[in-house]
Image (cartoon, rainbow over all chains, first blue to last red):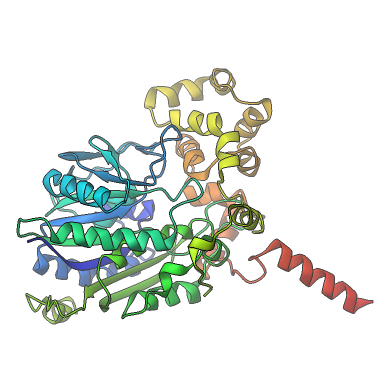
Length: 298
Length: 151
């Protein structure tokens, strides 16, 4: 059977894609950001996931104002990088996993999550920047991807509680897929940032770190944070963090943290990154990579 | 950190709270409707040929869209706060930033009371603090209390 072996959280600031594509990723500005992903890159090489369920939001690229799906799952064979106004990023095409994705779509709908099914779309920085952060610059991405797009642009986005519950249903869907697959789930976006109006540039380090703390262990209090709290405390675009809760919900009752990174600023945004293991007796440190690569990365 | 049961969320309270954040226009349904064509116009700039057409004659290109005169003037002046007030959304307006070749953070800084170098410096120092920027009502109450004390 397929199983979710890890959860990864990461910001997806478009400028990180630019830094990676134009080899600025080790300069004075970007170096400290990318250094926080070195551990994860080594760890991913050892983990060799087959599929990533990548929770992200589209930024007026594939979806405009014509159609606004709250939760959409990509069931296509492959996805190209979107032209966001300066030409598409020169990154490999993203290969889908239609068998798993369709299975998930069916299972989620039967579980009362009314998913929108997408067979063709381009994917923007929300999806491709996390791939660059975790895998660097390969000729082809080392695994398949099931895109799971969440509306966090037009209000109201789904509640944190609903996102968490979707994660729980995703876990159930994955575990009922017969093929043996090593599946990771990534929650992307955030952390605190505001890109609009006179209050732009807002950052809340204390709150962000409280949120990171809350992802670890048994507590599920993060699922009950109302939208207004994200808006007041983390800026209008900090609401993207509800997407991290889909990831957290998919890891079961308890997690433990393998890696954590926080940096301000990247452009207008606070960068947050975390690697989590489900910790419910699954015994998932199958390669011993939790410790081996921590040493290798040093 | 406030938490609550989302099942008890009242839509009217929810929408009222969205308007209580200083210097922020939350992209609610009302704004999405008001700005529909403004945002779709911005979206059209995803295509190279449209960018070229727009650059050649901005006014003529805008006149092809069912925008209000105020929305057109907001775009022509690159007055992004005005565009937000008229239903624009920053992810859509960002197509205009890239058409102009202006970095995202620089375009964002034009909506604040800072010039870009000053804004960039603020970000390097850890960004804008949420202190005093959480609630219009709370700020008004604090100001009223301070005024009372002055007397």
